[in-house]
Image (cartoon, rainbow, N blue to C red; front, side, top):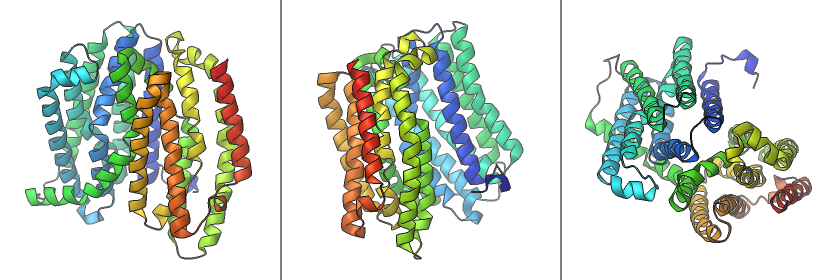
Length: 431
């Protein structure tokens, strides 16, 4: 609120800024790779390394950094060291296990050359800590440091773009990304350990990690769907089809970012004790505005994706358009906010239960639908699982808080827009 009156490098705006930069750079990198001389198999190898790093790190990185952000101001310096050490030890342990089992891992991920597993393990070790760099710079409100972080992050794009257009091969690209991760890691080590004011012990480390475990479990349940989808794609269909799938499995950023922003903004409003009914009406009003924005955009993209994709990502990825169209259907569940009410009232266990059921539905539906629809079935299963998650959460909201779905969703507009979006998807798939 009132962004022009706030420092753009305060923690909240800073985190949002870096998320936007990260998404934009990954998208630009994907576009450059699509127009490069690399084969689909080589692009799939690049996507596999990103998948590898994310799959084996997202849950403990998210848990430890979230715990760090909730620390008291006088504990931050010490906790930065604890988080860095915990991240390093965890990523090292996972990397060693993966290297020991490299033949089995290569078989599971459809990697023909086991040497590439070494690239993946090295990237996992050094890149995992890099996420802490943005948190460190943003919390310090250091403008120069933020520029440095942007510079290091931007090099990701230039390394991939320059290497791919100069026929350096996929190994050169992977090596460049690892060297960039090492540079970020060294920068973080220097910054975090430049002050010797705080001493840490093994007891401090174990206590910090054990207190982060509930967050880790929650993130593991709620954030696994994307990685499971990618794993199934590469395991059953190979590197080339993984590239096709990943380039299509790009949910509309507008709906994702706006929905998350609305949910996060309404949690403190709904958690207050004053006029809860009025706050619910405010949520419904804002949900209505969101529906009127994201649904028309999704319908337009649905009807034009088959022409846009070959232009933006080259003709190699024309088959990704259908997967993108199916992922656009996620907007139907994104504009529902039962989880916001449950979070505001502290019903975290119910959210974890719903996430667990969603994960099970996603896995079984993906395996089942793959048999009939191929790799497209994975995308269809994701849409089904997300919608089931929201319906389960609505059940908890009604049974626990005595709030009906119609109290927070404009059902008439929602149903009309959902019908139009589904009709557009059916038209695109049929013709």
